Each structure stands twice: as structure tokens, then as C-alpha cells.
Length: 355
Ligand code: PMV
Image 1: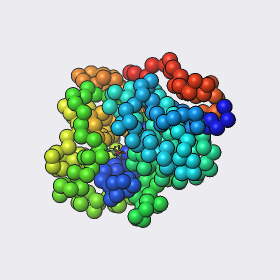
Image 2 (image 1 turned 90 degrees about the vertical axis):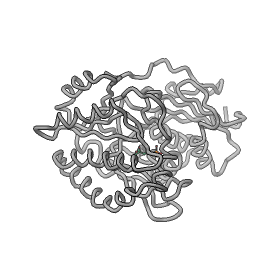
Image 3 (image 1 turned 180 degrees about the horizontal axis):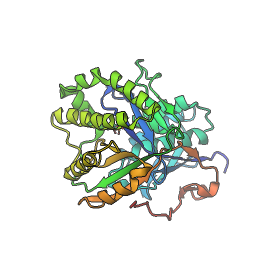
């Protein structure tokens, strides 16, 4: 088995409070603004095993038991190529499994690319720093650079043309605010929306609101850092909702318009506004899709779940704490690859459906 290099890692998706939307360099995934996110925890986790071996004849990427088409694996192959700078000859088998339903429209690219980056570095025995791992993950999917780190995270856009200063840093650990809970409200989707890659290019080209968004972003980032430091929900929660609204105003101002939310998402938004009538108890935020993330504190989770279950079109709700960040899985029986047969192992557990 000499020449076989294998490792397994787990990472979770992240939810941006201040969003990344727009690139100053499309091929290097360099953003136009800093973003701030919360890294999630179980049950939202992607496990990825990677095997580099001279016994393999081509790169393969398996996701949730299915071999992925080459055209759907370009981000994964880009990470592999960045990793094996010294031994491009070694082919790789990548096997990934999401604990949450991929078809539900939940962004798994951030967790998947982060887990792949960490597993690949481990397998190839590359001693990269967290900063270097974040820079590499960024080039598989922008938001993946934030999933390399746990807790509350800020991705610095950087200014250098080569992207060496564009990476994520922790601003507060996951223990900073233990009461925080994130509810992911998975809603019925009618059809696949425009990809975030194409959407961002069109926004930069056509939206007249976009430059105004960027003008105010530094002021906004400072408010978020301060409100997070002070755990000030009265300031933080309205800012989260206004930032999400601001992004979606820019998206709708893009031509052709990017309308990522649907009627169910709007009903969830209205529910949160109503829920906050007497005091600020929760905040909604939406990315490039109709699912809604709700940021709240443990005290309101049960009541929110009860209210959400009454909205027609809400399929299920996943609950997460703030996550500690990715981890390496050392136990070889937990690998998703059988090294002898060089095939994916069968994963028996079904994706979590939530409540
Ligand atoms: O990383 P991408 O290309 O999937 O972009 C995601 C951008 C948003 O999810 C809309 C916002 C963010 O910062 O995560």
C-alpha cells in the first residue's frame, strides 16, 4: 500500500451576517468587500475523505454515494491541483458525504471545499497554516475560506492582485456567545436559481445600487464587530436583517433580476418581524436561495420552531450552535474510502431531516 496517502476531515457550512457578493477577480475568487460569518455545527457537517495514489488512473469525486460528472467537479479538481504542486502525477479519489440533504438547496460547497482542503493537506503531509488553508479553500468556493475556521469569522477582502492577503480570520471563538442558535429553514423550491457565480458577475455589470452598498460597507462591518463583541442583540439583529435586505435589493436591481427568495421565504421574514414586535428576539438572513437562516438565542428556539411549523411550504428546520470549526478524523474505520479496493465505502446513515 506504499504510495497511498489518505486522510479524512469534517467541516460545516457558514452563514454570512455581512455578505460576500461581487468579485474583483473572478478566477482567484477575490471579493469586493469583507464579510462576517458564523460557522455552523452538527447536524450540518460534510465529511470528506481523500486518497492520493499512484494506483489511481484519474481524479474522481463522489458526493453522497454518486460519482459526479467532471463538469460538476471543477472546483474540487482545482483544489486538488493547488494541493499537489509537487506531485501532479498522483491522482486522487475524493469521497464526500453531507449529513444534511444536498438536494434541499443548502449550500454544501463551503463545507465540502473546506473539508477537502484540510483532508488533502493532511494526506499529502503539507504543513499549511490556517491562513494558507483559507487562501486555498477560497479558490474552490469563495465562502469556503470562512468554513476553515470555527466561531465568528471575518474574511478580509485583501488588496493585493495575487490574493495573498484575502483570507478568513476568527474574530470570536465559538465559546464567545454560547446562547446563540441558528435555525435553517428549508423551504419548498420551485426551480434552480441563477448560480452565485453568474449572479455576481451580472450584479457588478448592471446594478446601480451595488456601488452604494460598497460605500457603506466599512461602517457596517464596524457595527457588526462591536455588536458581536458586546453580544448586543438590540443592535445586531436589526443590522443582520437590514444587511440581508440590502443584498437582496442589489440582487433585484441586477439585470436580469436575481430573485432568490420565494413566497414561503417572505412568510418566514414576516413571521420574524412579527415575532420581534415587542422586543428584538431573532433575525432572518437569506443567501442566493429561498432558504432562510434565523439567528436567535436558545430561549426562543422552541417557540420559533412551533411558529415555523405552521407556515405552509416550510419543509423542515435544522438547528445549530456556533461551531468550533473543522476537524481531522483519525480513526481509519471512519474513512469514506476503502484503501484496498480504492472504492467509496457505503455510508449507512441517512441525511438528517431536522424537525
Ligand atoms: O461562495 P459562493 O460563490 O457560493 O457565494 C456565496 C455568497 C452568499 O452566500 C450569497 C453570501 C455569503 O457571503 O456567503
